[in-house]
Length: 341
Image 1 (spheres, rainbow, N blue to C red):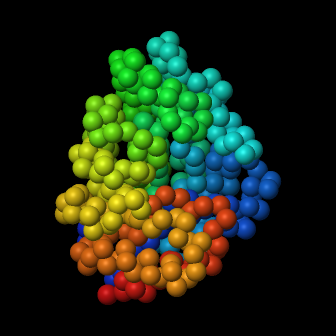
Image 2: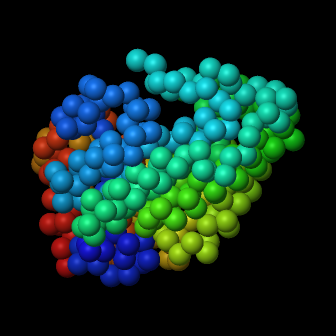
């Protein structure tokens, strides 16, 4: 197996810097668009054969050092009792948002068995990968899941979310505790199915101040990482807009901390310390730039990362839908070439 990714997660030396990309299976690839022309996103997620097929598409196309199972962060909300659809041009919609104490109490704490299709997809993908690269599992973090559940979809200002958080803190913590327990069971089931690392996505947590993060989020994220510490796989903790939260995220847990492009990588490494690996942090929009500019930016990040083990090259968030495929190819090849030891 190509073990660069797992070695870097463990802060062990590698022959070059490993690279994988969030949303590396997506609309920028014709192969993915062909699948989605026939199937909705929920159909792909809930059909293990399709989810495994899509997971392997970027691995077959590029020299990536890890695969990530194709799923959606909102899947655990369905067995909790929320109605989820994906609307054209609008994205995910929760049709019965959580707004009151009664809504929170009604949510079921599922054990992950209703999401067994994700485990089945992981098992199929592991077999199909046949040891080529490791497979990453993932889940949404409690704050991001809570925000979707409360707002009913995407939000710019999180008025409903913060309204519950500030106005009814006991109800907020009850909701977050339920989500943390569901996410822990879900990630354990993914590891049991064959995921060789897992990533916790806190895509929206950057809307919080450091004080709010520590009070309203950190205890629940810590519960998840405490629950996973004996699973013996790398635990990646990622959020966007988190330049002011890095130390608090590090305290919450994770053996790898993912950083976005809004903080220089050398600063992130210094602030996080030498006892965690770091993953990041190319701005996804850079992949639309000319290749010579991509090369310059990749080189800068590799220099900022320094030569110490424990660095995984990634984007600061997911690949965007219209990204040129040849630029993704160029970025992968440049990381390997420029970091070869």
